[in-house]
Amino acid sequence: MSETTLADSVLFEPLKIGSLELKNRIVMAPMTRNMAPEGVPNEKNAAYYQRRAEGDVGLILTEGTVIDRPASRNEQHIPFVYGEAAMGGWRTVVDAVHAASGRIGPQLWHVGAMPGQSGWEPAQSPESPSGLMAPDAPRGVAMTDADIADAIAAFARSAADSKAAGFDVVEIHGAHGYLIDEFFWDKTNQRADAWGGASLVERSRFAVEVVKAVRQAVGDDFPVILRLSQWKQQDYTVKLAPTPDDMAAWLTPLADAGVDIFHCSQRRYWEPEFVDIDGEDGLNFAGWAKKLTGKATISVGSVGLNNDVMSTFSGESAGVAAIDKLLSRMDKGEFDLIAVGRALISDPHWVQKVKEGRFSDLIPFEPSQLGELN
Image (cartoon, rainbow, N blue to C red; front, top):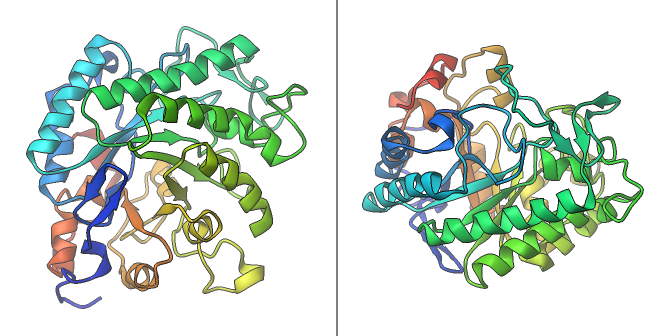
């Protein structure tokens, strides 16, 4: 990794998708901070996101923000994306980011049956497709048809409220073993009704209906992102779509429902999605999603660091890593945007330093940095 400027690289080319205009291709990945007291963002949250905008992040995606459903959160201070108090707090955040010439969108989230890290429990029982948090691991209750309909409506209300609050885009969290992903996965969706089924396409009905409802709520030109993953927190080895044909069958209805951008989460962005098809240098998840749907894609997974995000939960630090592979893949047009996670927690000026080739000035990630909004 040489100490030369990257200002002329594809990383710093502008991009326009619908009403969203970005100055570069770098996205701040959503990362749970759990520091919005009683769900209401405050000045500290605003300053945290503003610093990243001042550091030239092209698009900021907030941590997961929970919709208006019982037990949609699994930690006490995850921010809400509903209600007058929370939306007032978000308007402060949006104004701060816009003042720094940044762009920002919330990640709309329901955690399903997944517990949090702290041991805090909501007053209501967790809800999920079949009352399972993992294979043969009951937790909470199975959702009724009425619960499902209300959850879909809650996603749509939060999207509409987010647009009204001035956000530039919305992202729907459909990955990592949370509610939408629990519908995708046959091990946690064992329903025998229209919300289940033997095929991934059948089990995708809930996600399709959420996307349709969000699209209707925000209009045609307002960008909608959907975050997906093959892997789950419950099982890193899962592949919902083991072949390109399976992936096309999964993603095409979601694209048709209104997704503008697929945010494709891998633990390591450089790993090929189908090694047996195109070898070790093959397309990653985001590359295949773009190829199969024609939609823009965001890739994510351990960008700029030398270990993956799940190591954070065991208290591991992460050193700075080269981004040569990233530049090579983006030069080829494999995907359109790259999301950076922990590197932007440790260093709000990561983007500026990379742009200027100041790699030796990058700050490594330490788990202790998760304890404050710096």
